[in-house]
Image (cartoon, rainbow, N blue to C red; front, side, top):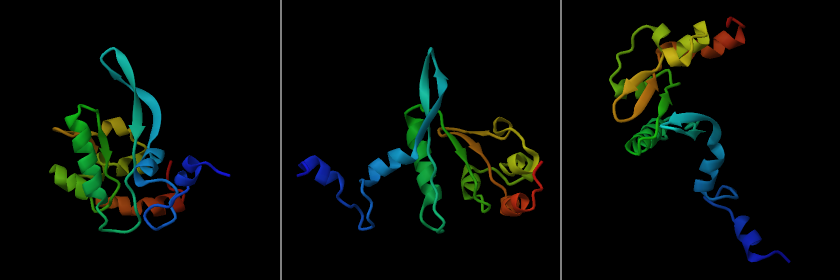
Length: 146
């Protein structure tokens, strides 16, 4: 017979058959790798992705609120706007300029991400999006990337 701890971990959450509570699923999605220099100590880097194929499900709002909360705790944060509609970039106040100053340049010209990041007071840094991101699928599909 299984003990009660084993039985409770198999409980489903959210009516969708998830076997872990949502907070545990979030920790599974985050990945610790590398380190960030903070004073004399190195701290693990946590990477989180907020994604969903469906529009209008608060992906941008969630990412911005997470970054804001981390910023208040002085955790270095980098937001990467991968949405061709560039809503996160627009919230920052960055005027969409040339595509070569956005994350699109990574895909098109293999530019380093460090060169593309801009400061966002109280949040951290942002790598802005551009409408040209809509072309990324075709770039990879046609093998145009160098």
